[in-house]
Amino acid sequence: MNKIFRLSIIIIFSLLYTSAALAQEGLGKDSAIFSAVVCPGENCSRSMNISWGAIENTQECYLSLREKESNKIVRNITLKGSEGEICTVFNSVWSKMAGGKNFYENARFLKFGYTFNHLKPATEYYCLISTRYKDGNGVSLTSPLKVLSFKTAGSKEWSCCIISDFHSYPPLPKRLTSAMAMVDTVRSVSVREGREFEWVLHLGDVCAWGGSYSFWKRMYEEKNFSSTMWAGLNGNHDNMTRQYILTNEFFRNATANPRNGYGGEEGVCYWFTYGDVLFVMLNSDNMRKSEDFERAYNWTRKVLKKSRAKFKVVCEHYEWFNGENGKTVQYARWKKLFDECGVDLALAANNHIYVRSRKLFADNVVSDNEKGTVYIQTPSSDNERGEKLFGELSYNKDLIAKRWNEGPKTVGALLMEVTSNSLTLTLLNRKGEREDRVTITK
Image 1: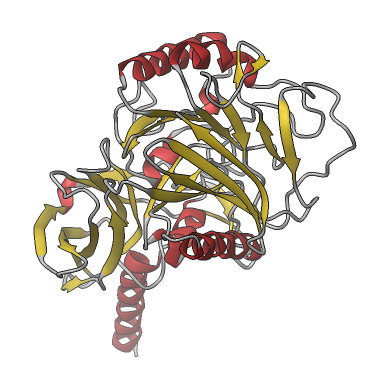
Image 2: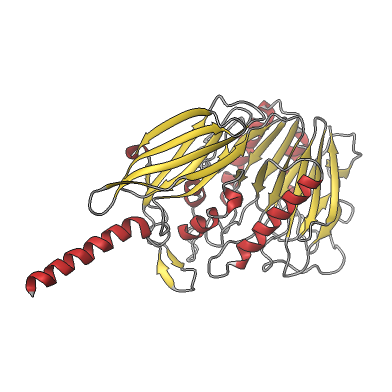
């Protein structure tokens, strides 16, 4: 009887260990590899970054890059498990399960990133990712394949989807459902207008609590995150835990962006080019203090001055103007630099109300063929956390051209279409109907 009991205990612990290796809450229950996504390389005509997580007892990771049209193998890469970074920043964070139960995240894993260089411009690729790992009995197993798709820059004309503020939160899954449906709607409109968008730009607050790794992991399971490149920035919700612990490490370890930012912000603040357009990505949450803002300001100025891109776009999470009353917010901090460096488009989010300025230079409205910046902030897209518009603008009536939302239940996003001499941004509602459009010419 004692022998049977001891044998039962051994079997139970063995099963628990095997289960723990693959089913840690926050890491997923059916795969040794998770949170796989394509991020921009520094020059998206020639490079792309791949980001993924794997369980700690991973021995090797295998990447196979192939051209989509011919299925030709471009590159096969093998990475040792030791080449992954042990990520503990999400571990033991107070969180919530999908069913609403409180728990501490068990999210200690290996974080991997890989840059594919020397790619062909204007080419569709897909990447197969798998891992070899040991189970609880020391037996080597191979994970199911993850498949990621992307297209490199280089087409004369291209488009992207711009979305933000969907606050993915597993206890309220319809938030993510609403946002992904909106991405699909933008895709349908882009196809109808002649070309499917090539990538997605998000402007922050994609997670309710960025410190909850199970939220990122669940979000990355959506097909939209495996079918195209996603470039994004750190929103205040992505930057925090349920207990309001703040760090940019959450965003950094959930992605694999270019590490060309300034000290402490590498991979969080970054820049990349897609065709003739430079995108400069900022972290609003690390610009609260004057000395931190000065560091961001100087870095941004340096990047903008150095770039020879035809169009310059700067993105941050916090809004340029208050959507309810029009009061100046981040516009006051950045307008002088944007005028100096010839920024064509400034994108933001956070306020949950769509706002578009006229073309501005030195606080004045200028004509389409003059130097100036159009400031746009996206609406929310989760059908839950929108804001209500209250009457007429009290401030900046002459600077602001358009405001829009649907009240507390707002779903909207933008389609940006790029040609050799113009950027056209169209605001779409959940039905794919046009609510606003502006064209920025060079």
